[in-house]
Length: 346
Image 1 (cartoon, rainbow, N blue to C red):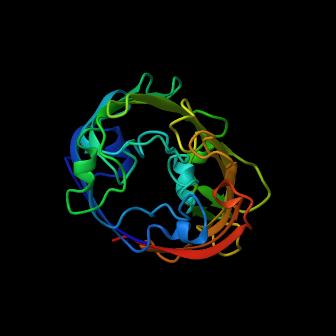
Image 2 (cartoon, helix red, strand yellow):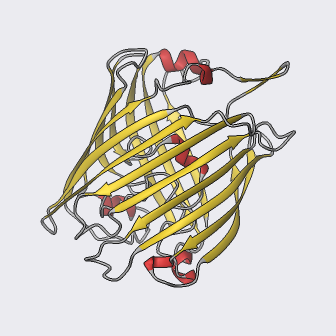
Image 3 (tube, rainbow, N blue to C red):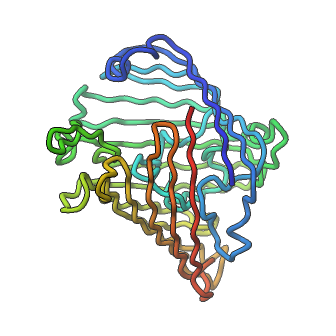
């Protein structure tokens, strides 16, 4: 699969230094388009239930965001309105971006049908509130999406969305807390003798989210709760380490194809001598199938090892090795998959 993304951000203060920009109170507009090409169903060819990479979506051009956003500075209420996806604002944690497999990367393999998970988008409103500037009480996010136009937005440029047209809405609530042990020290660069090395790993974070989806097309009321915990790990390997755990539990096992997901992993920066900015990632994820929708099927489990090799500020390579146990929840032989990801930014 190949993914080409075009993102345009316009607003005052965007040319300011990053810290100053984050402290500023300002408005901005966001426009994002994504173009997918390749074989989005390769996982079915090899017998796996879930795509081996996060970019496996119906091919074609998608409108993934057209929104207006207010950044509130250190406190106050942030507002985002327009057409956008629930991620990365909800459920997705930064630590998940280190992985390739779709069950590990992004939204904890959330499978509630109709949710506007990127590249699917829907008209929505997001509110963000940090009660105390230093973050001692964490940050709250509320999101609401109207799902009726989701099918038409996905097919705007001729894409076959590969999901049913539905009517309904969804609402989500999330609490994030980043004042975990070691968070202050991890805001500083890594000191390596007389050299300062920028940190590539995300800061410690606890994130808890829940939400529901009211599908008027079928009369179903579905939902899920999800949580991720990312912690600093003082291991004698590399320059910096993180460990994480993630959980997604669906409320309605009769309509959710994979109502339970459990994952976790380890990230290490600079584990190879002479490569201080590279990141090694190890992760696992197990998805439980609905006994109603998929009787007789158990869980599909993926183990992933990858290495992000930073060639330049614009180019990186990510060789990856995956082992898929009990493909599609069956007793079939494990699948061993190898690949490489290329990311080019300009």
